[in-house]
Amino acid sequence: MKSIKVILSLLSIFTIFLLAACGGANEKTQDKEKTTNTAEEKSYTVEHAMGSTPIKRTPKRVVILTNEGTEALLALNVTPVGAVQSWLGDPWYDHISEKMKDTKVVGTESEVNVEAIAALKPDLIIGNKLRQEKIYDQLKAIAPTVFSETLRGDWKENFKLYAKALNKEEEGNEVLNAFDQHVADLKTKLGDSENQTVSVVRFMAGTTRIYYTDSFSGIIFDQLGFKRTEQQAELFTPENKLGNLAIEVGKELIPKMDADNIFYFTYTPNDDQTAINTAKEWTNDPLWKNLNAVKNGHTYEVSDAIWNTAGGVLAANLMLEDVEKIFLKK
Image 1 (cartoon, one colour):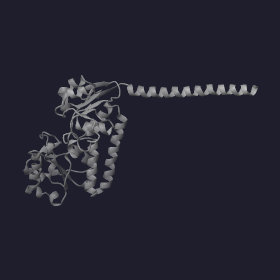
Image 2 (cartoon, rainbow, N blue to C red; image 1 turned 180 degrees about the vertical axis):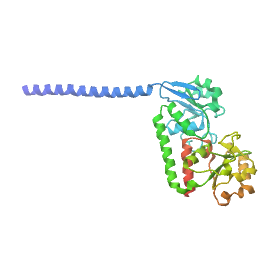
Image 3 (spheres, rainbow, N blue to C red; image 1 turned 45 degrees about the vertical axis):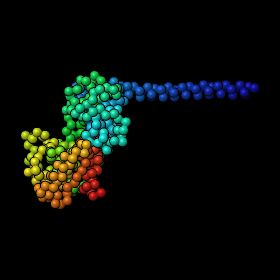
Image 4 (cartoon, rainbow, N blue to C red; image 1 turned 90 degrees about the vertical axis):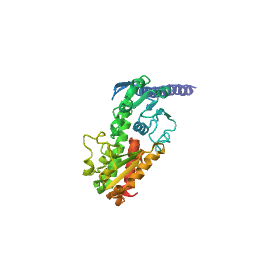
């Protein structure tokens, strides 16, 4: 009998210790959850093109008002609740359409639908001063609003701002580092190929441009180490209204398009036949056919969406893949 009492006493003590241990573990788990929740709830302030914007917590419902910004969000595993329509596609570029199937269209970059944005009840709006400065006050009345400054070719600067606004700076750095590694790997594969000169041409409805070093493709080519011809550099004087982004040209300047390799794309919103006809007219012109790149079979038609219009990190990686396929004949 005495032995049984001893055993029961020991069992009672063991049970007490077990319950205490479980309680401690639960408290630690709860403390960890509280810490995590606190980190998520912590407010932060973002400096941007229109001033400073405090954001109370990591945003969950984001509206994005630029094409390159849409790519930034997707690269950071954030699906926007609302976004401006892609410049090409119905309503999204082919390379992002699957990821955007649950996203509502809120107009275009140039004509934003403020009412549609308000209806989505966002907790963050990301836009661009160049495109939407006039409606900034309306947007910030709906939700905290962060604007990038411009939309030139250096998408990385805007990407860093968007990552900060989303409270995802660490993830953003990982995306940028991965892109830079992609560039470095490709440079190694290209070897002497990067010593060749490149030229980039865009056809639109009744308009033709040579795109240069400040363009989306231009900055990527520069990072890869490709060069431009001296004869083309002469076109980009301080008087050029588009700076080093691009220059509109007439057919008499077709000879200036020549280089070791010519890449060209056509902007065809809604399958614009006028733009398609412009491309056909120029590429059938005797001056075009007389270019060394044409005679050597070094002209390449590429996607306007990937090489220019989308303007974000997803397109940048796809452009690198195109360059690899073209130069390494994959």
